[in-house]
Length: 328
Image 1 (cartoon, rainbow, N blue to C red):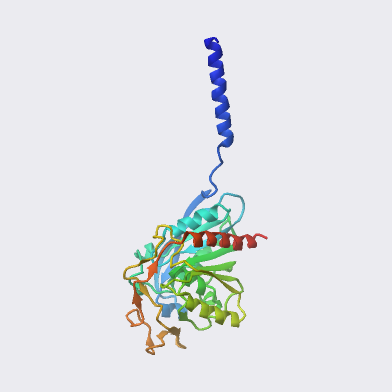
Image 2: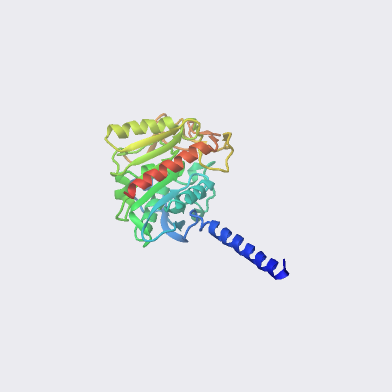
């Protein structure tokens, strides 16, 4: 065989391998955002009493939100995510990638950095529990007018402290006091929220479905309190569902946590407290008949957190199924 023939055959082989490789090369990963935007959000830092009274004289603050627009065209469905007491954790990134892969955009609110906070786990009194609801409604004002967001398909999701904010952001009373966007969320998805506090009018919700996700062994925000609240909501004719994961500890969707639940050292939990809003709009400790304080004896420390891969995968699938129904 001549050198020329060998060279030609070699080039043909290289070309055929290259063509096969090109045919097998996948397209762009679906979990990548087509565009990322960082939005400033003009909000307020308030005491819980100010929030409950509709008093907007709190300290102005600018928080931020990261908008990741899914691959696709036109106005897309979107999930707003509100972090917990540890700030934006790895679960927010995991959820964003999972949702983007299904053509769902995400908006992650950072309620801490603009307030010079890193975490509130060990000092929950450093920020009123209801501030995140203001951040959420102010974000909705931005997103409802964004050209790539479908305002009828904006879903609200939150985790722990953020899950509590998501749960109570569904109250009609709070919408009337603070929501100036002109729209409502299509669905409310609280993950392992604190359901301990009873607010005035907390069974009068907007006409949107609520779906709570929580683990049976959660000792940070025990599921029993949420079951009690759900019972009251169902009795009032509200649309609410609960998915209970039998092995999932608190923060079960944070992949950087150990699979074996561990103590979150010095983190405060109100799992033993009974807190209720009185007619004057103050939060009372029912056991002491005095204003609630994180110095109260019912406030405990050292709850457990941990990752549960199976529960996380199941939650991914269920949330995407919920959003898929909005597209029909």
